[in-house]
Amino acid sequence: MEHDYYVYITTNPGKQVLYTGVTNDLGQRIIEHYLNRGNPKTFTGKYYAYLVVYWEHFHYINDAIAREKEIKGWSRKKKLDLIKMENPNLHSLNASIIDPWPPKDGSIRGTY
Image 1 (cartoon, rainbow, N blue to C red):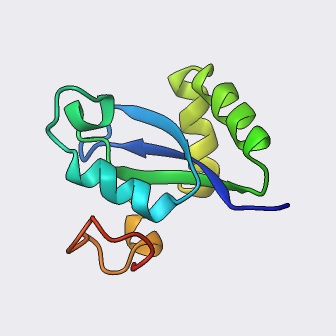
Image 2: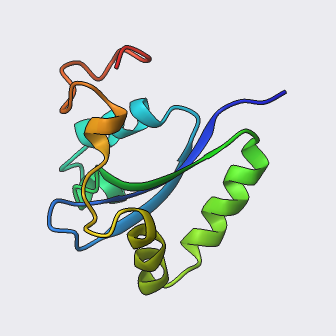
Image 3: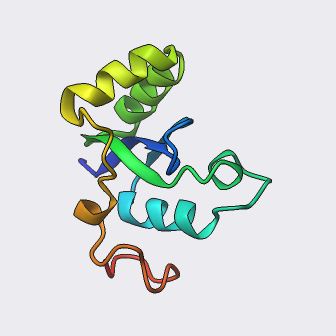
C-alpha cells in the first residue's frame, strides 16, 4: 500500500544551518518546527530552522528513511549542491506548502 512520506531540508532565516528530516505530513511538520522556534531542547528550535528549502516525496517509508539517512551523512557542501539544483537561492518553500504562511493555528492537522 502506498502512502505519502517526505524527506526535507530546512534552514534558519540566516541560512547558517541545515536540518534533514522525514515525515508523513510535511505541512504539519513545518508548522511544528515553526511553533517550536527558540526551544533550546531541539535542533530546529534552538537554531530556528523552520524554512524548508528542499523536499522529496516517497510512497514507502523505508525508501524515505533510507534517503534521509543518506543525506544526513553528507557534507554541508553536498547538501547545498543538492538543494541548489532545485532551489539555487535557497528560498523558503513554506508558502508553497502551507497557505497561509506563517500558520495561524498549528494545532490543526490537514487544514493548510
